[in-house]
Image 1 (cartoon, rainbow, N blue to C red):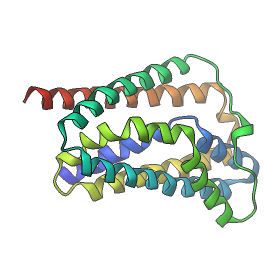
Image 2: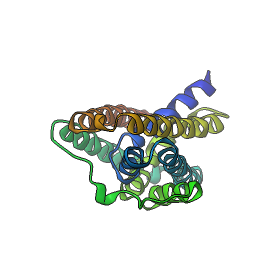
Image 3: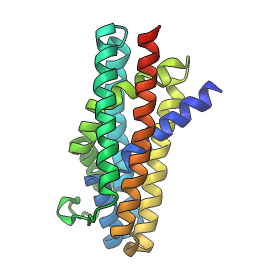
Image 4: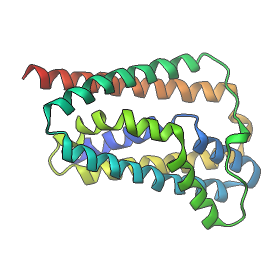
Amino acid sequence: MNAVIAFFEGFLFSLSLCFDLGMVNVAIMKTGMERGFKPSFMIGFGSCFGDLFYLSLALLGVSVIFDYDVVKWTLWIAGSIMLSYLTYKMLRESFQSKNLDADNAVVVTRSSLRDFVAGAGLAVASPTVIAWFAFAAGPILAGTHMKHEGGLPYFIAGFFVAGLVWSLAVAMISSLTGHIFQKSMVRVLNFASGILFLYFAVRVFYNGLMDVLR
């Protein structure tokens, strides 16, 4: 059961990042519309490894320093505030118009390897991804797989699988029906992301409160 929980939490954790309309998603969508499924998916596939790189850094950091009370309190307070802000931001944007910005998309290439590398590079360089792992990953990771013995590999697997499924779905849909990614679809993505951020905000706050009251 712990393995299933850890996998599910890793899956949700990755989805909360995937739902953001950042450079990576714009690149996947635009490439799918212009060049088809395979180049679009390769960009998404590469971005999965970029996200995995940041996840590894976050895991190393949390596993070393989270035993200190001052770190627990800092991550609890900062994480709860950051996640609450992201919830507000995404829910607010779900009621506003927001079009795809083609200027932020990856440069069109012909090689599958170059598409893969471009996707990984976009994930590593994306301000959204950096901010997410810098401010939100710590408290979420500390409150999930760290509490499930032996659950770390399943958490990582869930994280990677979610990114892979997301990339596959977005590449397929954008290559077949590019018109779906208009204002209404962007609003749906923002709203779904806001709900996930809300879930993690409540979870982080609750776990931190339980630690304080012990």
